[in-house]
Amino acid sequence: MTRTRINWSNAGGRWSKELVEYALDRYHRRHLRTPTVRELRAGVAELPSHATIRRMYGSASRMYEEHGYRVRPRGGQPGRRTTLDRDSGGRFLPKTAASSG
Image 1 (cartoon, rainbow, N blue to C red):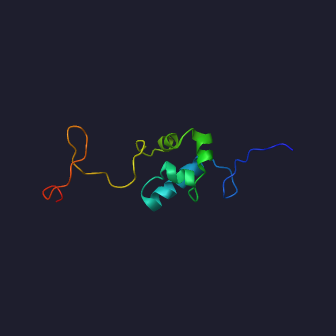
Image 2 (image 1 turned 90 degrees about the vertical axis):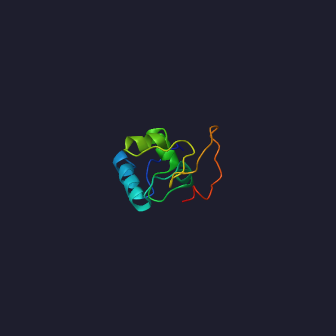
Image 3 (image 1 turned 180 degrees about the vertical axis):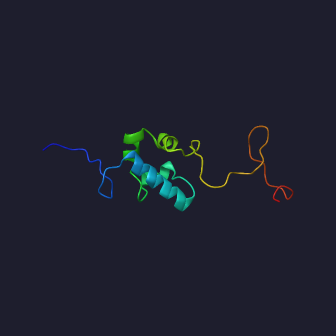
């Protein structure tokens, strides 16, 4: 018995770069962000698996770059950016009544 590689999507068709782009656009419209790598590894409905993304692009970051999305830095979280003040060493300063405006 020979093993064959299955390159089919959950919908029953092959993932092409055009289909991946459409799926990313659709996800972005619904959630107003791109999925994190953690979410991709866990599996996102209507997107290719993390293994398929790695096979097609090499990494999720390259997939985002190729389709025109901004790539978050490693560990970067989706959502609001932090507005906390930092000291000269880069440590976060506690919020004060004046800065919590």
